[in-house]
Amino acid sequence: MALLLPGVGWLVLFFVVPLAFIFIVSLGSRDVLDRVSLASPSLDNYFKAFDPVFLPTFLNSIRYAAITTVLSLAIGYPIAYWISRYGGRHKVLLIILVMLPFWTSYLIRTYSWMILLRDNGVVNSILQAVGLTHEPIILMNTDVSVILGMTYGFLPFAILPLFVSIDRLDANLVAAGRDLYASGRQAFRHVTLPLTMPGIIAAALLTFIPALGDFVTPDLLGGPQTTTIAKNIQELFLAGRDWPYGAALGFVLMIVTLGGTLLALRTLRREVIGAD
Amino acid sequence: MTTERNRWLSVYALLVYAFLFAPIVVLIIFSFNSARRGLVWQGFTTKWYPQLFSNDELIDALVVTLEVAVVAVLVSTILGSLLGLGLARLRFRGRGATETLLLVPMITPEIVMGLALLLFFLQLFDAHGSLLQLWVAHITFCISYVAIVVRARAASMNPQLEEAARDLGASAWGAFRYVTLPIILPAVIAGALLAFSLSFDDYVVTTFNSGVGSSTLPLYIYGKIKFGVTPEINAISTIIVAATALAILAAWRLGAFRGEGRAVVDEDAPPA
Image 1 (cartoon, rainbow over the protein chains, first blue to last red):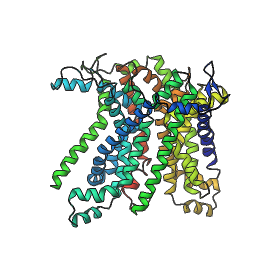
Image 2 (cartoon, rainbow over the protein chains, first blue to last red):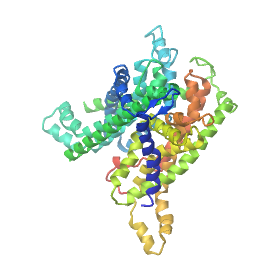
Image 3 (spheres, rainbow over the protein chains, first blue to last red):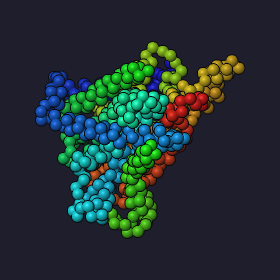
Image 4 (cartoon, rainbow over the protein chains, first blue to last red):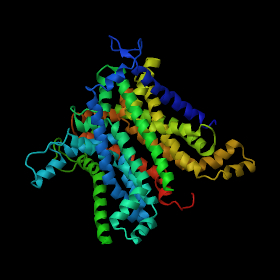
């Protein structure tokens, strides 16, 4: 028990308790000096968060995260399949190569997309050199650059669980399907896909959650006109002064994230048990 | 037919790997371009690298980053290792809750964790921006990673080894020191390396919790790149990428990703 106490104590004191502070502050309001006032606690900030004026910010974050998730699954599934089926004894190395960019600084990886995407950047230079366009195409500070950056950033999160579940799949089951005259496509649709569904759910979750709360990508690649929940929170805290409202937004983001994760984990567990 | 499909899939795989590495490669290449502005290649140079060392602001930021990282690594490695060992060994009520407590910091959006600690320090101590605050913040987001790496290693260890040592007259401490610790040490070091790269890189949590004197390297870089791409930033970024990649490869060699990689790939393999 003595092994656990220091770590558990630390996490309770410096993680759980601070989270409670977010909730407490979110019930307050700001006084004339922009300080947090808890004189008359209320849920007003939460009503404000779902006010039609602010709703587009939420929807925009969800839209970015959803598109990123779909793209990551679509790009990630074939590569996970390839590593599992054709990776042979290099499987571990191939997976490490997927994860290596993820472990190098997220900030710097996002920055390197700025080098690629700006008006006189690498992508535009190539497009102009091969004559596809004469004027530079505006890529930076658009939805395209944000979604590209997020997909790049979170693709490794999708590939890993997809690989795990595809690799666990008993190839004999697919072969049996083929023996029973399923076409390659049918075997994939009725055998491989359902059996790797837990991996797909995990991959979707592991991409959607960080994309939803991402601050760096929309800020650096999206420019000032791109609004997301995380950017909104950051502005409320570091530039604007409405902390109680920022805390409410943070708390909502936290609940959505945790709720989504726990729900997906439960589905995952049921799927796995069902599959067994 | 099958080989045809394999070939297309292999080409596709190559493209995905190119997608994953191209931005980093481009960054490294441009850190050696002698042009101050723009993308035109004006010849190979290493001049941007020595220039970094005469940039006082950057050096100050680096020193703060290391001050934060070293303490964060030490404390989170100790607390995380104990947690990982405990979770691998002990059967107790509340085990599920403890595992959830480990998981939640990893899935909490960084921005939420950042502002939680900011509010905690401000409301409770009316303090903000001390080095102590950054230490607390970084230790908090590193603990879980260390614990999970160490737990994987400790769970694969034969508990009878320590019992055998006790039977042979070793004290509890002796058995830990001479049997358990050497076995889990690679995972402890791997966890420490992960913690180092997490701490060294962190931007979001740090931006909420740093003050005037505690600006770190990622904060310095962020401030600069908001105003565009410069060769100096390319050079410092290249150094950081190289340093973190080395740390991660070392952690991999020590088995940090065994749970993700080998154990999954090779389920029939005998436990190490």
